[in-house]
Image (cartoon, rainbow, N blue to C red):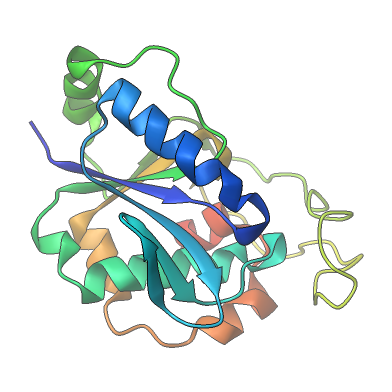
Length: 189
């Protein structure tokens, strides 16, 4: 069975969800994981909770995801695990057990895969009304190209090979100027 590391994504606005996430992890026996938030400096906030030096707003989710994957690559996680499962802080597992994890593990064969893969453009203005007024995406639709992408809200998986592509990646601040949708930005990368 493939070794799957769970990557939970949270933000300071919803930091109160961390204890709920940990309770779900314990309840469903999800195994090894980290919970990430963005902030002014990189530090460990508590056991299994890392604050990365990156922006923490909705419009900065591509930057935060790249920072997370860089952290995992730079700290050797790709050497220990086969896949990384990106999970939002509001996802719950209705039915989970070792059998379902084995089924999931058997399905993971590509470097980038998800529970809901889309092969057509998404809503180009989905973010409008969700970003700050000083965001480069305020009232601006995404006009970039779409590629097949795994819906981030439905979770997706990256292989260790894919995670290693972020090793020593330091162009974080530019990501927000070109990408508003983290799942599509990851698909491009």
